[in-house]
Amino acid sequence: MSLPLLHVRGLRFAFAQAQRPLFDGLSFILPAGVSWLGGDEGRGKTTLLRLLAGRLSPEAGSIATDRPLQPEELGQQVAWHEASDSAFDQTVVQDILEQLVPAGSHMRLPELMAGLSLEPHLTKPLYQLSTGSRRKVFIAATLAQPSRLALLDQPFTALDAPSITFLLTHFRALAAAGQQALLVADYLPPEGVPLAATLNLDELA
Image (cartoon, rainbow, N blue to C red; front, side, top):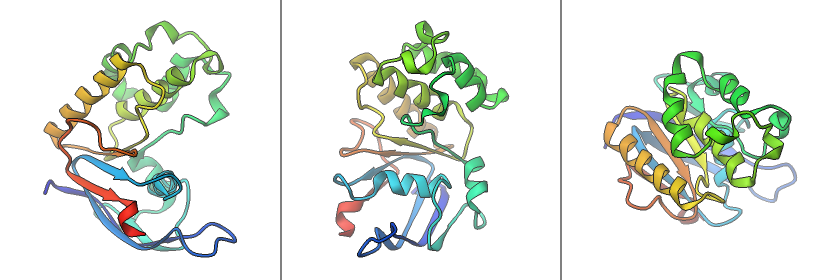
């Protein structure tokens, strides 16, 4: 297995008034490379991403790199942006990318913008974009960051075929480099991408 970058131990989380926890004692390791988070609808894929990104706090357990991380630290170590976030609706795409991507990492953006066909949309406010183009903005922002771990939630949804092909090629390059960890949450693993690890939530039922 590749170098472990993130350790999750004994994670427990339940929604308010839920009859049972969504996760109870969940433990796994995320190594460098590309990993797949699978599971049917309602099994908790997006919720687990929010926990890993520090957007939600577990009731028990720990998320750690070389030491346990607090939620605010996870936001610095983990790159993830939700396409459904309305906070940027009135902001033009170029400004969104400049705000979300650290200044020293902007050199990654040209390749991502070209591969995802975002250049024609740079001066448009987010609300004017189609669902697919909107998702591309946050995918580019996530992949451009130099974070230890990047999270993508169903990255191929509503994307055109050339953008899907570009993403799969990009994922294969990340898998070969083995320097960062990318966790892709989707119903099926990314086609043709060597996986460092898999976590299928259906198998935990």
